[in-house]
Length: 425
Image (cartoon, rainbow, N blue to C red; front, side):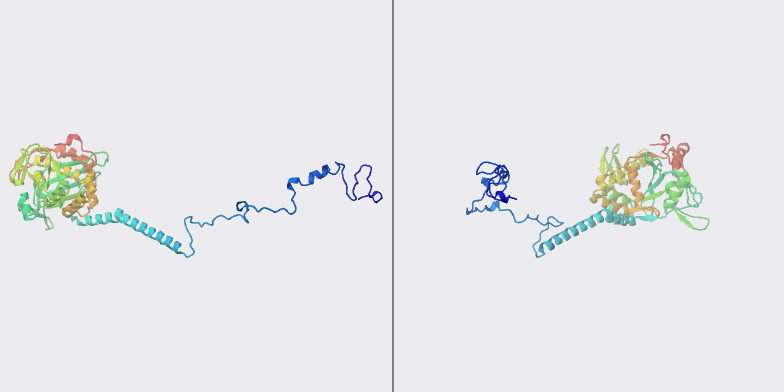
């Protein structure tokens, strides 16, 4: 506060040169050091009355920060205010979902349902008979698996033209020229073996009233006898199986039979089989006329090839050709080019299942097991032969070699591979 006594006067220091103002000493007429700190600069002073220049449009600051564009949980969705876009997107999504569901259902049907239906349909076409009957003294179940494969000379399924073309004749009834065993050892690493059973094998028959005779006699339906209970028993699959089981001690697990008509149809369904006769063969009785060397034979030619006996060893040569043919047919039928081609696999199944005869307990899967077991390769042999005498009232027969045949049957009963010493060409 200023001193009234000295108002209007300068003090000794000159600090009170204006009433009520406290100043520090500075340059006369200019701001002192204190004022310089807080006084505006000349460049910042506004000139009263000067026209203000408006900033350009780009320099005008926004009134508020722009908000980011609003987005929904679906980045691609647009809104037009009418809902049309939303309905269109939902309709498109629904169509895609429906197409996907239908496609999956079709694929499921193709992969699961159709094959299952085809299997059941084909399995139902198989003809079944009671071939593997139980009887007193039948061998117990054994290790390994044995299929009995029988080729019947039944003319069922052949028309008159085919009978003339194939030279099969019109014999009534049913007989067999082909009896084979497919033996699959218990050891999965061992190869299966196809064993031919000569049709003239001289064994005790399982038909009442008949003594020892050719094994194929047990299959002939014209051969009948009466058992102790007065029941008539005629030849057929069941007596044939029992005759072999009692003679060998080997239990048969599955039975497969095919007639001449099915034989021809199977070969033609796979497009023929390659067989290799070592010399030209002509047999009018079998309808056969082929050159030597490997060649593809159709059903009729292959049938004559396995039926003919016009060779030096007659029946023994025939069983060797039958094994050759059977192996070639299985290889062709189980080839990927056949199985995965519907134009060959479907006719093959239709031909086979329509004319195959199996035991009541056999299913289509057992036939598939038989084919797949042979796909990897098989050994082929015949029950060892001892001699081939001609007997009164019976004719020429084949007697088994007792030692070697028992060696073969013992291995089969134990589920073991057949030893080389028991094999015979």
